[in-house]
Image (cartoon, rainbow, N blue to C red):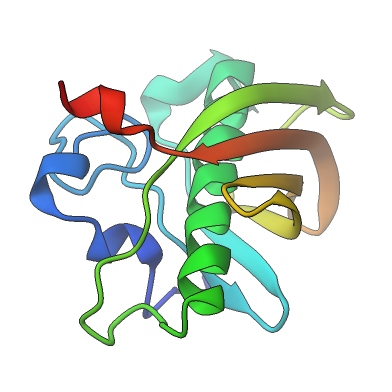
Length: 159
């Protein structure tokens, strides 16, 4: 039985910020990654589609990198939202983050046909900058490990 996230930070992003190919709920062609809390860690669960093959039986590494990227920015948003006294679903608009850096290490081939689970640990390195360490599992096997440095989306994005 696949785990399901009930409350995800991406569900709270305003429509203007819900278009990311990885995690935007309004992008019809996108992946719709959703990130929520699981204890003190963050989690994103995603089952790759047939189009996400690298070769028969294995997931394309770019999808895994995308998962780590969006999980990282979503995890940073969750963390700052909580630090500001809010949780997904309470009606408060969450902060939006962008990726400053992304590092991915592929440890084992990622099998296709099973849900992937990204688990993140967040470290604040500045009030507007967070480092998120993420591990991606398939059937409880660690397939990839990554790190995202996420920063609060600058106001210059809107000019």
